[in-house]
Length: 173
Image (cartoon, rainbow, N blue to C red):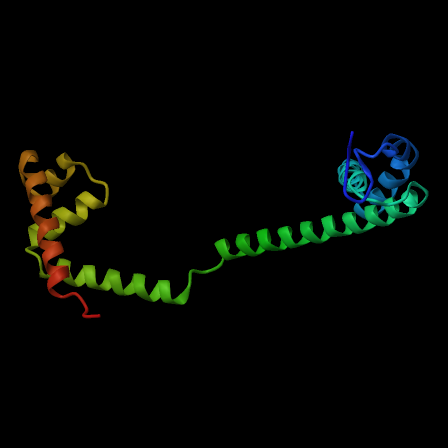
């Protein structure tokens, strides 16, 4: 057993005796605050660990432990409420409308892409839109009266032309 600077042995020689005598009361106090015995037992463990490192005289242990149990349980409740509040806030943020600035930027980007598509040769623009809408090469070929082998080349050229158009008409910042 080690002795601390304040003369209290660690672990305290009286810890087991105090634990046996006060544990039911400490759990009961925490359970009254929390309404949950399992959480109250966790609180009791925390309180007894703190007591084990303290210099509280054994004669004052029961009162000190009861007060510590109440404070620790209340802190636990407050932390839980804050966590629940944060989780609700995050959940609400995920279900609310997107940020106005994000909406404006997205709308502006869509407008720019549509304008750039309008400046592309018709066949390239349509091939690009159809392919990026999920149609297969065969479906795009049939829709545009192209050979299936030329669809990939047409789409790649359209993507390159779209990038050039977007860069050419990019807003200056």
